Length: 463
Image 1 (cartoon, helix red, strand yellow):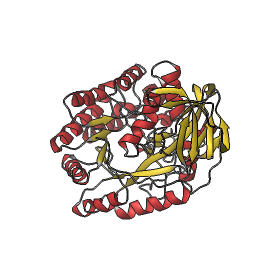
Image 2 (cartoon, one colour):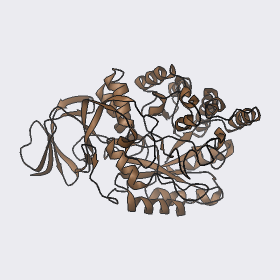
Image 3 (cartoon, helix red, strand yellow):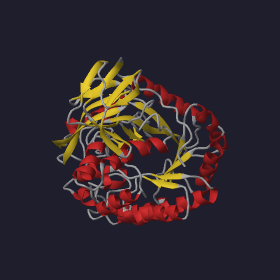
Image 4 (cartoon, helix red, strand yellow):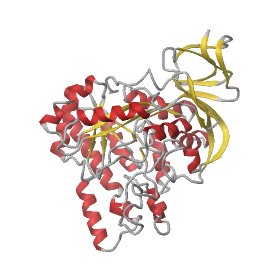
């Protein structure tokens, strides 16, 4: 007698897509069978796909802000948004302050997540100041389940120069951790920003001009070279175009341990979105910025080639209005002081399915690899997460592959007042989300309780 049986659906099991019933006991998958007759609860999944719950390994949730306070997106609201879009696990960030150490902020993050999260969660540790004292705390973080470090090659408050980045790479190698990197050239961006502002170019559209593909490409090539020097695997976050991905492809061809990801904004949004009237373009500002419409095809090509092997959201939510929103410095604020980031937790799976599977760019198995299996692998969570297999957590999304939906902010169920994907038409939408054998979303209604998410200690990272 299983606790729950999912019956009649078409399951995506790795490279196989088969009609399969799924038996769940104790929060884990206990059986995959042609037919399951006995369970305390049965959910019919006729005409639905059954896929692993999404694993989003690049999110910013309830992070402390430099000016004090926290981001608007709380653990409760972010979990609601994740479940609404079919995601069941996230890996977020703990930020080190310049001059600070690591453990205190990590413990505080875990406490806040424990109180509010409904989604299962882990953290990357951002290293902004690799002092001896800070690096000495890394073994304690590893013992507590931290499996990766994050390095920024830009942004004043977290920027690492080459010497500091090398220290982070060496520390990761000593402790068996993956290093995730935000690759943009800090000095080139500062030069472009100062030049644009001096010439009165302050509107949101100039954000894209201040961060052209070459500054992302150069930083990516440099990060790869330094990692190759140390012999440390790295993972390049949010690759915006094929021009940047080619640096990863060249390194992979010579045997360097480097992986890359992209995000939905780089296959849907464009730099032209930031050129909307008035302040409206601020809604689409993120870094790296969206490129041209022609670049979308190049990103899909790199995904099909396996150069980029996952799609995460880089969910970094700021409202349009309000004291913490995009307009907090006024609607006439220069682009360099507009909060940078876009929300995308709930939109990720529907956009990737619609743009990818529904439009024939990728197949179902590739979709599952991009949004669940490969993120789980690189995060050290596989096979607990990211796969439908006996013994894995029963994290599932029941998917209506033919349902047309027009995206709206209300459907995102996040804390902020807009979505950059407002009005985008997609085909494919989650009918239900199951986390560890519990139905946590059904028919767009989230049913879980705050604090029911579980901490995910992470093992050695994929190499």
